[in-house]
Image (cartoon, rainbow, N blue to C red; front, side, top):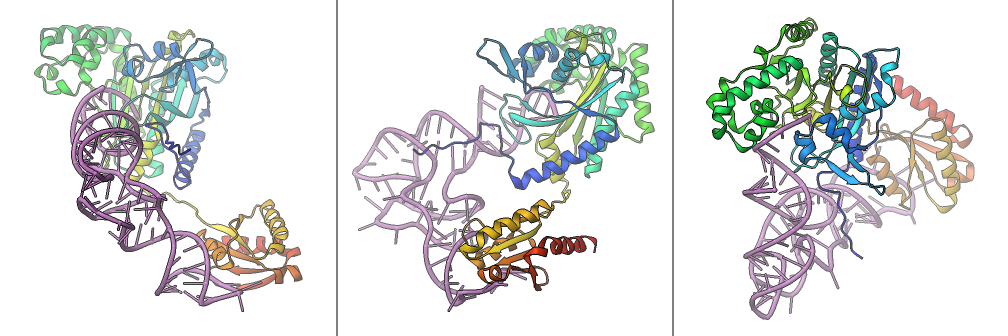
Length: 430
RNA sequence: GCGGUCGUGGCGAAGUGGUUAACGCACCGGAUUGUGGCUCCGGCAUUCGUGGGUUCAAUCCCCACCGGUCGCCCCA
């Protein structure tokens, strides 16, 4: 009989108090996307597991230990999406968006992501991301545009303590050369490195640079930097991205150790961090990069791409950490106070008619006494209370009381809608 | 996957091995028989995350599990 239920670990309910904040943030972001001429894409919550295995990369943490994978009744292996890029790329290929005359294809999404991890501050098993993907252009100005978009989102919402970190992972040739140099450099020290790094050295040597445990190891400081291994083309590309960022007045820090966890990245990689106090161990707000080989990997024509994912709960956290006020409208236009059983039918009708004209109205459904109904109206910050008692009903009028001034006037029911429209309109203009 | 810490009403928060589990806020009702924000009065946990153990007796002691929270790893 007594069954206690709770939301699954790492998930939360977003209640009305907070959903207003989410709506505000989402609205602001969509406006920016519109300015930048990005269009929304919505893809399924889950995909065939191979989409992520091939797209994100088998050696990544996400694929190895963080996916919510299950088998459906038809025996197919499906996975709740752990990130957005692979899924959007799949949709791009499947729907042949590479054939769209408008190139590049500029997309944005708001989507839940799922990662099986131990929850902590700013890290949930179900998380919300806003993300952007631009497919079909290898122009470094697109890289700059995407970064600019992300920074603009934060700045417009009022964040100040931001740090943009960028790096270049180079093209295939540069990466291969760098990879070989890394293996050569670290192999003599292999036994001194942590367990993870020993496997990384063979699987994905680049990520050794990312290791927090071995950060102090002397070999780390002398490790070959990717920037020294960029070929002419890659170097020029990176230079242009930086030039464009500077032209837009966007400050950045180049960090040659910024590697990013996913396999599909090349050329530009970036992360946006928060420097705000009281942010806990989590500092990354958004991360992304270029992935020129991914579409091909998923069976499409060779198509360059770039994008980022932005954590929305982290964005909300950052807003809070920086004490950014989110304007929230709590007010209610009218609250109908109806007393006596006989008034109910008329009350229901009045409320319906006011609402039909776009006026915000509510009434009591708890069978409260008049005093209780007034308290409710007060709590809801109603601008006006409409009083309908048996007295008023008899005379087909309603008493309209302003909760601010306390003034009260009698209005015939037949002209109530009109009267209220006038009052509320006047209030808004002044 | 590993480690720290916590788990008492809607919320916040005391508390003790023993026959009534403080207090504050919120809420509901009354004083005010039709009018809010102030005041006063009253009501509001057969129960202290779940299960087991120790004990004559456990919310308080022990164990396990579950969950929250913070950190490691990695990232959004």
